[in-house]
Image (cartoon, protein in one colour):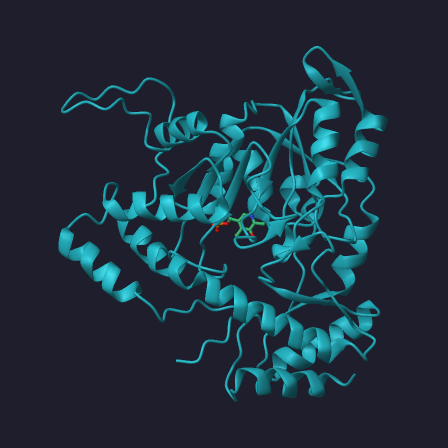
Length: 382
Ligand SMILES: *Cc1c(COP(=O)(O)O)cnc(C)c1O
């Protein structure tokens, strides 16, 4: 396949001769009216009805026991790890191939990552690689698994559903049960993605979603913590709102807390975006099908949803035959105004995580050299 064929194809899909970005927000519904209404009400900040309404919409949509809106996805993940009992100096298993926010949330806890390989099926954390790493490097004690080299406790496993494609959750749950580890899902990219009919982020003890400007829906900036029981959702709400005990005028806080609550004005955007999410999902699936058909007869491999899952196809991706063709395609498309990009630098290559524990990362390293993301904004006729 010639790079110019792809440029033509993308321009044709988006019906545009201008710069085509990787992913942009779309506002075609009630966004303006809800935001204006929010301003008129003066409740633009930490209290207001849009926050409660948005939390209810997400809880209903995902089927989780309770959802708590936060200032961003990283904050949701940080809170999740805090509530999961991760402590300073604990180790947490996650994938090397992820956006830096996953690893940063661990850093905020004073915990350290163990980077493990991904599965070629999902591009997310591989359950077999996790089990293998633990067998080689951990001993199960009364405290749970402990790292043989450092004596540190290994507390949790944080898989990330890469580009919206769900990881192998049944197998991961088994590994977590076997090793007494808590499962926290980084579902930042996977709103609208399902694992065997269950929404991503609802199978682990906690899940975190992001509403950053480049995600499937946006609140400007924002996140949501999905909780697996009502009690922990109430607790999550408490700790994300400075742990203030309700009282008409007294300031009393009964535990360390965060100021992580999503402002009402952002939630107003979120309520409107949730109304159009089903249409976005439909459009993204159509777009993925078009890409899939386009790449079918080429040497490039389109990344499909795993067979057990329904993906939101947040970002479409292809695997190039080698790094040289990857570089050529990146160069050509970006110069032609069609934005494509390589996958994130693997976490253990970043200066702050160079020393981190890690397993064999063969598949992550292979994809790092050969994967490209393609323009994926939903196509909505105005
Ligand atoms: C977007 C994203 C987050 C959260 O990002 P925020 O910008 O803090 O909302 C976390 N993890 C992954 C994998 C992401 O893509």
